[in-house]
Image 1 (cartoon, rainbow, N blue to C red):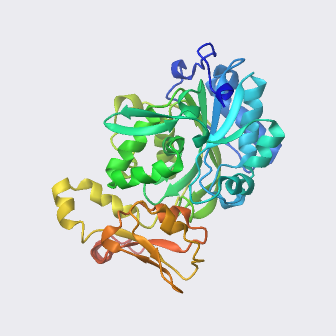
Image 2 (image 1 turned 180 degrees about the vertical axis):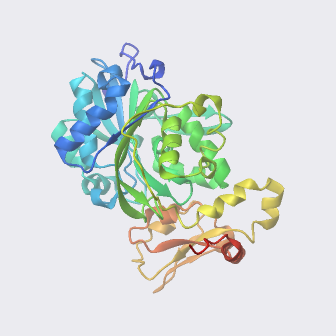
Length: 400
């Protein structure tokens, strides 16, 4: 294990000092055909100086895909293995020492995740190690008022090549560059952090802090086949046909918000950044996509709670909530029970899982790991009433 981690003499990638550090590059790509993807990746990286601008011979690089759970590539839950392959080849061609790692949801055997996602085959064929973040020791960090433990595979890398899948997310609205760094925390600890950072705004701050604590990075986002609707695992695959890249994950996600027509204020880890001086003048390069419509999670309005002061949330919290509901597609696998950080779900004999509503913190961990798409996130009666009133008074288009 130690020989996979960088040493003091390892060459350090220059991504932090890159002159285009807040630029975001886009490239059109209509599928995962190897030749098409290779050409798109080269066009994507050209404005940033190509892969050789970030690595040199002997540079220790962690490739960090999104390997949430055991879904095949066509489900658009995880980073496509062909993109991982093309990135590995460019890194090795520049002389880098490459390791691929993530920390999937702990309710599924990691070997199953590697096999079904296609990552095991790609890494074997390209001759690079495929590891869990748990394979290395942990280091506890404090950043921006948050404390968390991360894998040394990430912390000690010269460069992290972050390969997120572009998806909607039932808790954070969007998951892409910034949120993918949350995977450097081992699976069981991620779940515990949901419990101790239950408010969405607080959880967003934690995600932001983890990302900011990471070494230099290059993010290449997989939006060729993205996910909309009730992501990150129960949504609908949608071909957006683009790749995006930046050395600044926050700039990339803000650019994605523009492309997907998402209000950054709805995304808890981006709140307040869209008007920050460092991000108001961000530059785009390449073939910027035109996405007419990107469907958000049905519970996206849950973030209205973040606009309320703490004292008011305590008063109305029993009236305004979003909780899981279990449908007939349930296969009684028990993954939702295991994933719940507050143990608010129990399996009933011969029936659907049962939720202890008052104990639920609305973290959506159960929804994230359900293999049968049997869980929906439902609003409280007061929220449903508010939605009906809003629709009734919404302006209607006049007849032509």
